[in-house]
Amino acid sequence: MKEISIISYGLKDLPMERRTAVHRALYGYNDHSNKGGYFYKRKGLLDTIKHKKINNGVIMVESKDRNKVAFLLKKNKAFVKIINLYSK
Image (cartoon, rainbow, N blue to C red):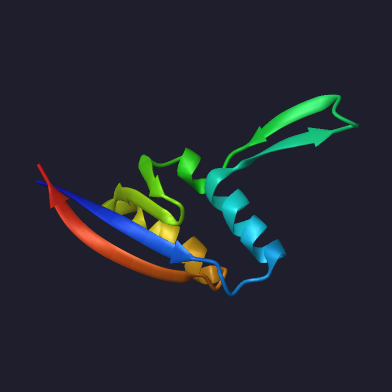
């Protein structure tokens, strides 16, 4: 059996700058420099682990990776709820 975790998080009580920082740290972002002359894809945490975005604020990851995601969210004072499931 494969163990998976569903991580639900909320950023409602955080200021907009902190919300943007959390989303960039999770999903990565596109960086333009020199007035659009250069383009860089900055990777986020979820670019390095296998995941599935279920809905806004809900991510499904393998249980071995849940602590990485939870640590990043808790470090940024986000509301976090984790549900552990088993799959065939």
